[in-house]
Image (tube, rainbow, N blue to C red; front, top):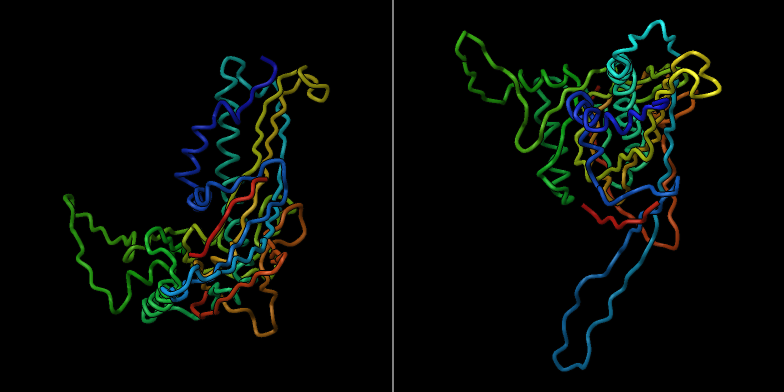
Length: 349
């Protein structure tokens, strides 16, 4: 067989790998009805409807309500690829699939998965800054074990007041931030000593919020995607992202992984050629912006750029303008906190 389609052959294995090792995997599972089909940009409809009025029993009709429709455009912006030329002398011919699977495994662990996490978290930060006036919370409070619970209470109370679902919230944070919960002054815990003398001090959730620790290198405000993915100059540390996944869309429109055997392509000559490409995007939904709260390191006094996203390179985690069409309005408030295609309907939280 001259061409092996690994996107098909290893689809289940890759999904299992992503669910285990990709910190942002849950973000890809929200809003499944939103699909990018034959389109780079989709428009999410935003409906605004009026409420009840008193019924007049002596009248002959109902009170007339109003319906306003506006559109929120979203454009895929992260299109990445790579190819590797593999000399046949470096491959055991009797175990071709295993050899290429090993290349794919190393690439996913060391490049693809960290980049996807980094892109998504930095993009959520930049969009939260953009949509602060629509309810997204971004703050630079310096958190410690003494005030981390107050920060958590404040941002969750804000979400509760804005009807963000309580079930399903996730707190993505650095290990340093998670340690504050272990040391929090006002928290009471019972530590279990298991057989063998093992003490389990882990905190995996607080109230209904799942805590997911993320390597700090994947939680930066900006990345340079010129060659792989590295924190950009001036990038700030994101300490925590509290989010309900329904307030965002993370979708991979296109994934391509193929291996061409020697002589199967004019460019392969006597080599194997492995190609990998993915096309994705992450977007905060403006009408649901109150479903995210971010604590980030304060910028230096000289004024570092905190607009988020990427610097030079083929992809961007940068901010996206929030245009609207044919009327409609959004409202929200900004709250402070710590240091650090197919068209489908979406409603408020």
